[in-house]
Image 1 (tube, one colour):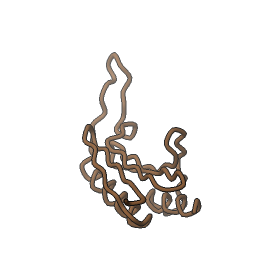
Image 2 (cartoon, rainbow, N blue to C red; image 1 turned 120 degrees about the vertical axis):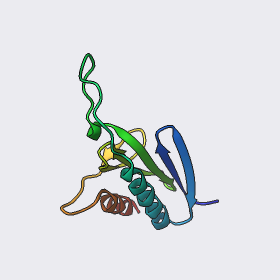
Image 3 (cartoon, rainbow, N blue to C red; image 1 turned 45 degrees about the vertical axis):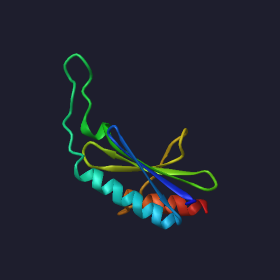
Image 4 (cartoon, rainbow, N blue to C red; image 1 turned 30 degrees about the horizontal axis):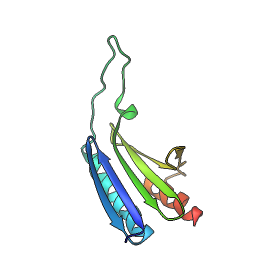
Length: 115
């Protein structure tokens, strides 16, 4: 059985992939998130009676990687095509990006620091 499970959520669709190595799982996560980001262009909605929700506030896709030693990490793809990395599951913590660092590089750094 593969050690790492990737869960890809886009709208109501859920897809699972399995990987033997962490690096392969992170590569799969980045590939899936970038594919969702290409189609992620959403328009703001609301603003009349209800509050206005901007595209950057809308999550159009969530990709999560689970593995041994309680590894839980992932990326949220926003309605404007941007991505935000996080660790944890119930208590999610945003992964801070360094200067010139992509969310995927920041996630790799955070996950490798746990090893």
